[in-house]
Length: 292
Image 1: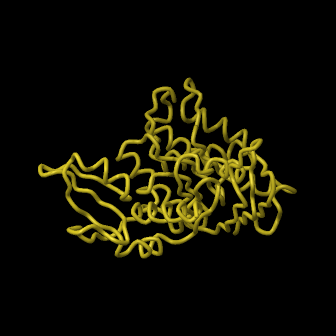
Image 2: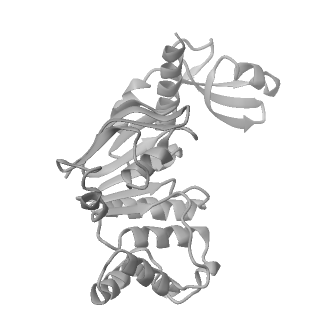
Image 3: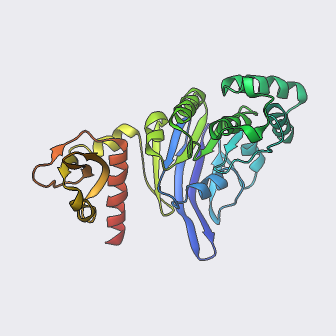
């Protein structure tokens, strides 16, 4: 099971949303990590066969997707960033409708819907109108509709944005349970989601793939370059101009700042790196390289 993305470029007029993007996806959770506007959603739409690339190729298990898109569509599940529902339908009615659109026969659809409502913990809300669902419940319903055809390739685009902490943890756990023999592509800018579920990270910025690595490799790159120190509150704004600050904590004696630097100021204490530190470091270094 393999999806190859080879030199994919997407242009909208004079704007280049993706630039010669190349990546191979295999079973596991691959996190597409990058800032807003990096090109993540454009790539998701191309992989979901909603949008065609301007150039480059997609290949699913050796077959070119542009020539035979249905081969990928049959094994695809997609939870887009803006997942809409019909507020007057209940969960059963909505999933039955989506199952019909996907071509499932009635008996298979009923069995699959029951299984998925249990999986996403919505059995007790199956007959509640969707207009009364919380954000987390809608997201869980979204993953249920994406799984109706038992997909081999599952795309989830910014799935935890706007969720409360409890719902976010529940959703992460669900993605981990689902990974198994599936390819799951998780597109996000929330680094804590990546730490929780990803087996591999693809870092994207301004339409370009900067690197692919597992979380441990990224953390190793930031080893010995993360520091902490407490500074007066009135110095914080000036420090942000020349330090790569990854976190702040207000204290009664000032502000404790966490920052990434090869050469720390006097008095700074070394800290164990987090994935967010590593992410900011790679992003900053690649942008500096692009300027030179």
